[in-house]
Length: 283
Image (cartoon, rainbow, N blue to C red; front, side):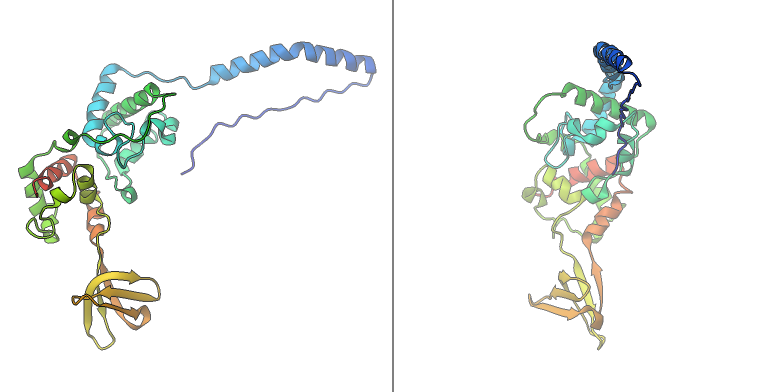
């Protein structure tokens, strides 16, 4: 993404004279005026320098609560970075943000490729988040904060278990692919805190399934192991690896992560918190 940068152009004045005496006078006058000119230029730069903006305390406080509810599990409670989310107090995007013109679109659109869902926020809520994030950036200016901060368990335990279970079995469609007694049995013991949240939103290392239809009409299904423009390979139910040239067969890939990505535009804040609360009971 390209961000606008202020460009400062300096011009050099070339003076020439026809008479040696006039040239000497010009040089003397120029030399005498240089310190004052430099001082004026320095003063102008100082006047044009960005002045940190202050925000009403109640607006910052509102933003802090909203940030901790929706953002702290990745970016830390104080916006200084979590186990996966970057330190927003050092963010170039935050530095170049003016009244939410850059923060707002990221909050509302999310970054699905990085596992960040969109959040449907009003202008007032965006303004409060902007106030909090910029205030944290100003507070940390010049400080060296070593490493990213962890995430408090309390940040991930704000949902309703029963509501999460209903979402899992109903509107979320989770039960069509997953089973609490099957693939998700003990998942809260295998993954804790933020790692569990990450698996829920954007599961890594999720194996895709593929069905390959041969020229004879026979279909062979298995776990996708290899795919490029020339070859498709899978591991079948016997554990054997098999591959074919893509031009000789038809194949259909079922990537489970795609279903999770599709949910990004459908989740509400409560859906995420409630589903997380339910998953934490699957031990």
